[in-house]
Amino acid sequence: MRAFFVGRFQPYHLGHHEVVRNVLKKVDELIIGIGSAQESHSFENPFTAGERVLMIDRAVEEIKRELGVDKKVYIIPLEDIYRNSLWVAHVCSMVPPFDVVYTNNPLVYRLFKEAGFNVMHTKMYNRNEYHGTEIRRKMLEGEDWEKYVPKSVAEIIKEINGIERLRDISGRDF
Image (cartoon, rainbow, N blue to C red; front, top):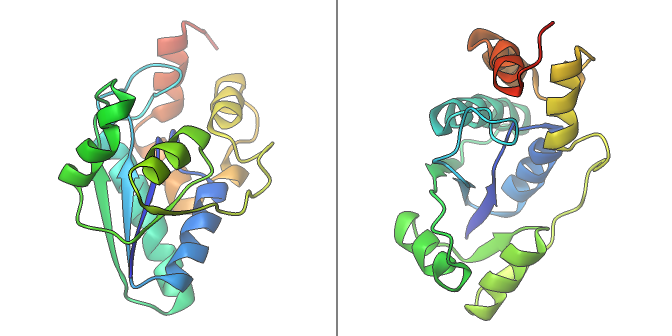
């Protein structure tokens, strides 16, 4: 069975990590769709699609080692099309076929259900702390943000000067 999971991953955090870990226990293959792939260099979407692919790929490798599995995980950037009625068809044209969708996003759930897909909710993991907006705020304010992302993701954010970028694009001087 092949599953689909989509998010913006700005950044990929421990909540995403737990979802991916649990989905990988249930399926043979996983497609991770990077939503809003065309967006970058803004407070809401500071990281490029390529940077997010790198973050997710390294984090997934951690999970696979931990679980002792070598399951195929496809990481595919998906640009927005701004037409909800066409979005599922757009996604399906961009990724390999899949059997089930995992999401907690109400709109994603609704759109895939209407298109006839089997859609499953995922468990929410400490949503107040594992939330991209809050993690980006902590980065901006100089607070401890690293404990909310996998170690490999923190390393990549540092490697690409992600904190400096976030401060530059938000107009904040520290």
